[in-house]
Image (cartoon, rainbow, N blue to C red; front, side, top):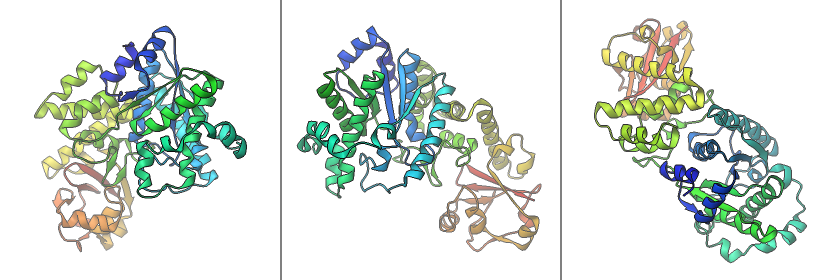
Length: 418
């Protein structure tokens, strides 16, 4: 197998390929231009979106040519793959703003790995398509019966598939054809939920251009504890630091299940495979060191080495605060990197309900979530457990002019008294 494909398989980025032997031979002969598509359905990517970008980086480091496609056109319809209901429709203005934000994130992420991709927006060729001509020239190559055999459509047929979503596969397939015609792209990669769309694009390009092109998918990343990848109690782990701080991202990786450490090191870092396997095989205190390595490396790739190291020191400081039971948050080295909010001293003097206080932080998204946290015994203020939902936090709780809030065992937030 071609070395680049071997790397993908060894690190867990290989599920299906339309013709692995032919693709391997092609990659042995020449540098292959390939693409990944990402729809701008939000203003920021989250870490679940990063898997195809890591795969892109591995292929680029092996000498192949990356194209990142931001779906400013297809986002106007919505991909039904992996969804049980129709996506919320966005305005063109919202989509355009998302395209620009995500383009910058893709470029920043890949540049941090030493990769400079070509970035394209499929709205450039989809937005002004003539519908009648498109159906005549492109639609004729698609079989409805075959489309319905793909998992994405078969699953949605049970809950309702809109006609607009049904067209998504045609448009994504047309992307591959356009990229082949204009940029000599010969390979599309993506998550395994995209298999049907990728195969359709390969077939369309072969039919229209008599060209040999290929598709490759990788497994969808899941957590051993059953939780959705990149999701926490407080929401998704976004790349935008204004939405999720480097410290919060570090803590996400630091707290993954032991069983996921090797897989996530292979997927979300560029550490050598042997080192990933050695770290993932550790137990007891060793697995905690491995998790810290995972957290540092994964956070550094997204936010930079210095913010990642500050997050590590903040995490250690927060643990020290908790373990000591009496150290003030302000006195611990590195604790400044823990997410914080400032409240006026007179407001604290008047007393703030514990539910209101926790709801102002990223520890809880609402008062109802704060209520559950308190009732379940997971809320602490300066390491003092709070079990009364009607508790009022006042200046007597503060230490060194700060409150260190904790949700569960490992999630922290600082409240600075101004």
